[in-house]
Image 1 (cartoon, rainbow, N blue to C red):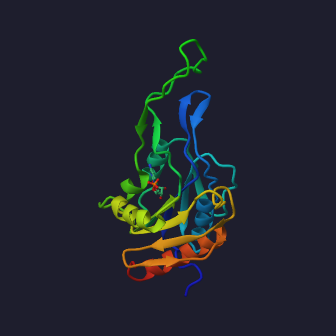
Image 2: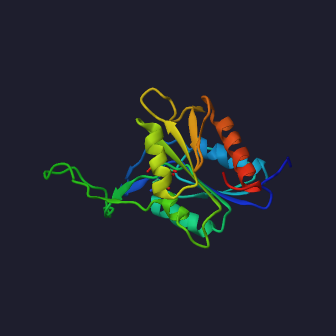
Image 3: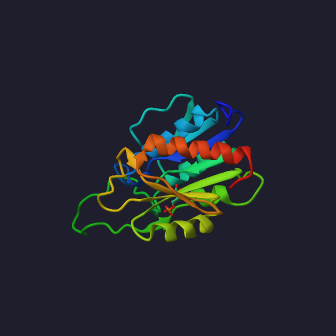
Length: 223
Ligand code: C5P
């Protein structure tokens, strides 16, 4: 097994939350820390891949050997991903906001007699589904994540197919799981041919295992 089996491969990784502006000072956000995505970017780089890490707002250092592109919104994240293609590998770990406010207020929304504002939301683009769409630019291996609170494997299996991903990494984020912002993660890897459940592991180790699995899939047939 070569030490840098991904030498010559370009890997695109998304990580962190997105921030969707409400007005110049307020955003819709989520609790993603970016830790798992950053760990995956680092692990792929250690195996020799050229890594582009498209990151939402997080407070994490860029891993060695990784080219980082910082973005705020889902639409910026999509644009940065498309600009980074071609890539052999895409790992979408970012917790992309499903919705954004239809039109960002130009000035800070004031508290006034009309009462609280009503925000109209519109759907954001799905970056994973876009990258997974068949076409000449489609990475050979497209991997998604699914954080679910219930019916984990059922929902994850359906999501893998619906989004067109080759693999889906499912993790349970129910109350008390400590996954968000924590350092460990218990995941199940779903492929077209089966599932593989890993014990609770440090996020770095989940990343290392996933990167090794990616390297062996790309050296043989995708499985
Ligand atoms: O639908 P859900 O958000 O649970 O799907 C999770 C997977 O889809 C993750 O891999 C996430 O990065 C990706 N995703 C995306 N763009 C979105 C929503 C989710 O890339 N707008």
